[in-house]
Image 1 (cartoon, rainbow, N blue to C red):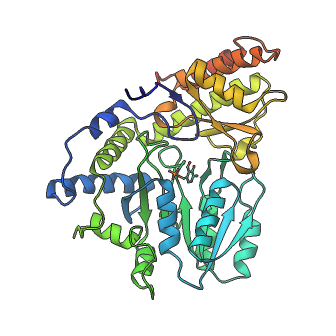
Image 2 (image 1 turned 180 degrees about the vertical axis):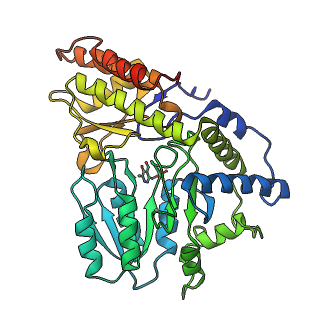
Image 3 (image 1 turned 135 degrees about the vertical axis):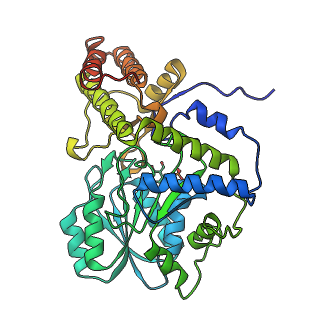
Length: 392
Ligand SMILES: Cc1ncc(COP(=O)(O)O)c(C=O)c1O
C-alpha cells in the first residue's frame, strides 16, 4: 500500500493550491514536443505570457522551477570578467549569490537589512562608481514579504548601461510587471505561486538586447540545458529541438494563463490586494506584529512575528495536523522569528483568510493568549464585505 495523498489548505510561500481546471488540463494526452499542433499551443502560451509581462519581447517557459529561471539568467547574461551586482535583501538574493559563486561570476552584492527595500541612492552610488554590466534584483522577496522598486531600479540600469535581471517568482500574476517600460532585460517566474499551477516550469521574458548579448558572447554559456538562446529557439518559429518539453506542464501553464485573463488581470491584482488587507487587519486585531512597513509589504505574502512564548514548530504542526493548513516558517535570518502566510492564486480567497484567522484565534487561546474570540474574523469580514463585494 502506498501512502494516501492528504488534503491540505496551502497558505505558505508556495506552492499554492492548483486550480482544478489546471489539474484537468494536465491530464490531456501527451503530445510530441515537435508536433506541429503542439507548436500552436506553445505560441498561445508565449503570447499570453508576453501580455502578462507587458512586453513586445520574447516569452517562453524553461523546464524547471523558479530557481532554473534564476540560474539560466546568471548562466547566460554575464561573461567571464564582467561585473555583476546582486541587490541583496533576503534569502532568495542569497541563493543568487550562491549560484554566482558556483558559476565563477565576477559578482559583488549590495546588502540591505532584511525587511527593508532596496535603497535607490545607495544603488545609484554603486553604479556611478563602477563598471557593472548586469544588475539583479528580486521583485517580491518571499522570505521577507517586501516589494522592491523595480521600475526605479530599471531606470538606474538604463542610465548606467547595465542589463537588468528580475526575479518575478512571487510577483507574476499577483502584482503588475511592466517588463518593457521598466527596462527589464530578463525576468523569470514559477508556475506554482500566483498562477495557481503545479511547480515545474519557469515562465520567462527576455529582451532582444539580452538575446543579442547571448548570441554575441565570446564563449557559449557554461550550461547547455539552461541556455536561454537555445530554449528561445525551440519556442521560436524554427522550433529547433532543445530538451524534451514537459508538455503536460505546458498544458497546465496555458490553462493557468487562460484563467488569469478570464478573471481579468486587474481584478486578479485587486483580489490579491483585498485579501491581503483583510488578512493583515485580522492578524493585527489579534495583536500580532507585522514587521514589514505597510508601504513596502507584499500582498501575496504576509510576514508575522512569532509571538512571545509560542513554540514555532509545535504551533505550525498543530495548524497542519488539526486544521490541515500549511504556512511557511522563517528562512535564513528570519528563521524561528516569523511565520509566512501566502495568499496566492487559488489560495487567495476569502475562505482562506477566515480559515487561517479562525485557526490562529483557537491556537492562540490554547497557548493562553487573551484575545477576543471572533475579533479577527469580524475585522477581516468588514474589509472583504465593504470594499470589494465580489464572491471569491
Ligand atoms: C522570490 C523567489 N525566488 C526564487 C524562488 C525559487 O523558486 P523555486 O522554488 O520554484 O525553484 C522562490 C521560491 O519560493 C522565491 O520565492
